[in-house]
Image (cartoon, rainbow, N blue to C red; front, top):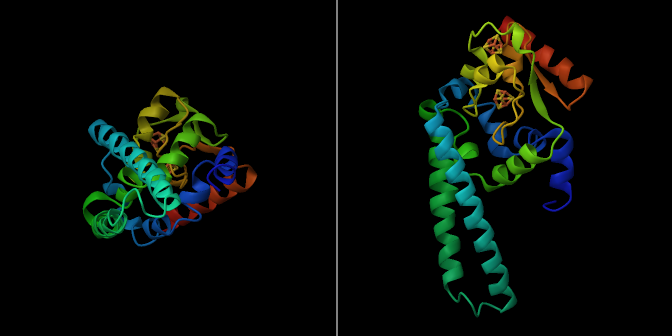
Length: 214
Ligand code: SF4
Ligand code: SF4
């Protein structure tokens, strides 16, 4: 999956195939966390911190995975009992405290995608593929934008979508999970999810109807 499935699926669908359709954390964020999606920090400072943190986690995970493979190959001769201590510490600090307590418990404070934005190594890998090599993107026909800000307000990943729309720039961001809500809440039909085909347009239209009626 890492070397074949993930690149191929991300090329066609962007990271949405995993972050919105497969991942349990994503599923929780888009159900239980949905009422809090507008609380995500949209500032440049948050974006900067996000990039440093998520790529730092990715590097740490790659190094540790490599080390654990070598350790296993050497039948525990490299790390000794440290591998068990590391595993326990990772479970508590990352698994429980970060992705659990902060990632889910802080929905009402920091929005619904804290873990996905700042800590998930899988999101980091998918994001790199999406930014460099993917057909998926959100396109804009900027001339129609009335700067209402709905798109930015409801972006759960803290992307200032309006800034792109005003400049008429496609939104190619590593963090975008392709939820489609920015497109669904735009009153002018400025935003469109490209690379997903006809079905996506229909789904966006359905989401727009549900949100308007809701
Ligand atoms: S699809 Fe739109 S609302 Fe959803 S994460 Fe991407 S930019 Fe944000
Ligand atoms: S929701 Fe649409 S009209 Fe409003 S700021 Fe975003 S792109 Fe512009």
